[in-house]
Amino acid sequence: MDAQPTEAETAVWNQVSAVLEEAHGILAELQSYNGAGQEIREAIQNPGDLQLQEKAWNAVCPLVAKLKRFYEFSLRLENALRSLLEALTSPPYAPMQHLEREQALAKQFAEILHFTLSFDELKMTNPAIQNDFSYYRRTISRNRLNNQQLEAENEVNNEMANRMSLFYAEATPMLKTLSNATTKFVSENKTLPIEDTTDCLSTMACVCRVMLETPEYRCRFTNTDTVLFCMRVMVGVIILYDHVHPVGAFAKTSKIDMKGCIKVLKEQPSNSVEGLLNALRYTTRHLNDDSTSKQIRALLQ
Image (tube, rainbow, N blue to C red):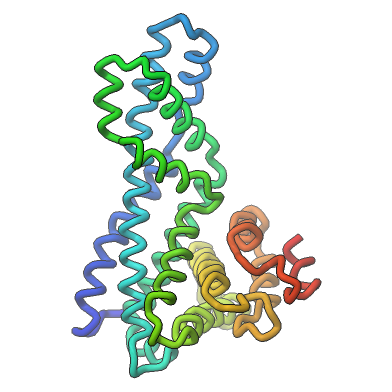
C-alpha cells in the first residue's frame, strides 16, 4: 500500500524515512560480510610471523568499522521506533484508529520490523561477526600496539567495544534493541495505558496473520517478498508484545492468536521461516511460562 503521511505525521515520517533509507545499505553490507576467518587463522597458526599478524589486523580493522556502523545504526533505529510508538499511541485515539488514520506511520513501523528481522536472520547465520570482533579485542588487549593499531584503537574505544560485544552476543541483536526500547517506552509513559501499546501491536499481528492465511489476500501477493514481509512484521510485533505485555503473547488471555500465527509460519518453506521460528523460540520472554499451553510449545519444538 502506498500510504502518504498527513501534515501532523510529517516530522516523524521524515525522521523515520531517513533511517529506513539507510537500512537498505546496512542490509546489503551485512549480506556481503564475509569476515577475515582465513587471515585470522593464518595469524594464529603462525604467531611468530609478523607479516601475517599485520595482514590479519589490516583485514579485521575495516570489518570492525562496519560492525561499529551497524551498532550505531541500531541506536538510530531505536529512536525512530520510539517516535513511531509515541505517534501511534498518543491520546485521544484508540490504537485501531491510529493505525487507520496514520497508515504511513504504521507502514514505517512495519518496515522497521522487516529490516530488524532481516538483519537478525543474516546475523544469526554469520559466525564471522563474533570471531572477527573477538580477535580484534584480543589483539588490542595483547597490547602489541604499533601505530597502526593505535589508529584503529581510536575508532572503537573500550567502552564502545564493550557495548558492541553485548550487542553482538545476542542471538537477535536488533530485535533485542527494539524490545528493550518498547519496554522502556511503556515504563516511562506511566499515564499511557499499557493496552494502547499492546493493542497497537496485536492489531498489526492480526492484520499480518489474516493476510497470510486468507486465500483471497494471498493470491494478490505476486512475489514471495510480500509474504516474507508480512511474516517478519508479524513475528516482530509478537516479540515486542511479549516483552511489553504483563502476561505476554502466549497466555490464553493474549490478544494474539499464537496458534494461528505459528501455523501460518509452518506452512511456508522451512528455509524461509527457520530464522523467524528461532526468533520466537529465543527472543520471546514468556514462551516457557507455565501459562503457555503445551500445544503452543509443541508447535515450536
